[in-house]
Amino acid sequence: MKKFFKNLSLKKVLYAVLTFIMAVCIIFCSFATVIRITFFNGSFLSDTLNSSQYYKDLCVEITENLTDLGDASGLDKEFFEGFVNEVLVREDVQTYITDFYEGNKLKVNTSNFDESLQNALKKYIKSNHIKSVNEDNLNYFYANASKIYSDSIKIKYLSSIQDLILDKSGPVTVAIIVLILIIGAVICVLIFTNEWKHKALRYIFTAVNSAGLFLLTLPLGVFLSGVIGHIAIISRSLSDMYISIINSVLSDLIVISIVLIVVSIALWVIYGRVRKKATI
Image (cartoon, rainbow, N blue to C red; front, side, top):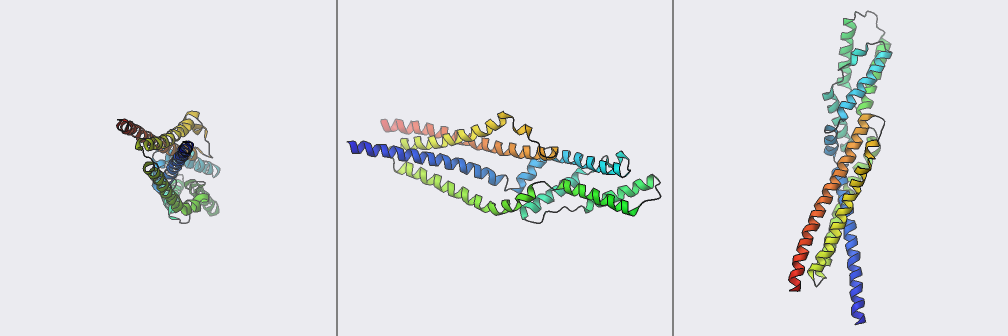
């Protein structure tokens, strides 16, 4: 009799450990999946920028920096009003993102911007009847304006993590597959080693529900704390971009957590029916 209870207690401990392992694997698998579909996905970054105020803020910042340069060069402050083309900015940023995820050298082609600036300045000189123009000063102005535009198009901090994103994309995918296999193995062990199937369902429910509640509590805690709204990174456009990325990641975690909670509720309903049949 003592041996029976000893084996029974050992079994419960083993199932508890397996339940904990399953819950942890679900949590890590969820995190890895969100990372894979966000940070390692070029379309995610593009969609995030399109749905945020990034481009509008960026155009304002470029205009302000160019205006300061023009003011120092003697240009009227109205010269750069409406000059920055948002469509061109979007195209150049998208090209930069594409090069980032394809592993290309990160550089900005400013030829279209340079051509527009030169044409606008020639028109300005002609309309204002400016006869004497120092070519060195003019070239200096072009070079600095082009640099302002190029530096603005580059998304800061991306270049420093390009190798990391490219190198770790495969391992993250492998990690997701391994975690799914572990989860599947634990489920099989719980089901096929339990004489009473409703008990196996209870353990599986506990793992799925615990993981779902954890994944729901974490992002909700971050949202409710208000810490995201206090993020300030160099410029307003960058702050808006990184805030939008964080919001999207946390929202994805909430979606996954809701799915897990719904699945756990379904498991609990099935558990109740199976248990009822087993007691008849």
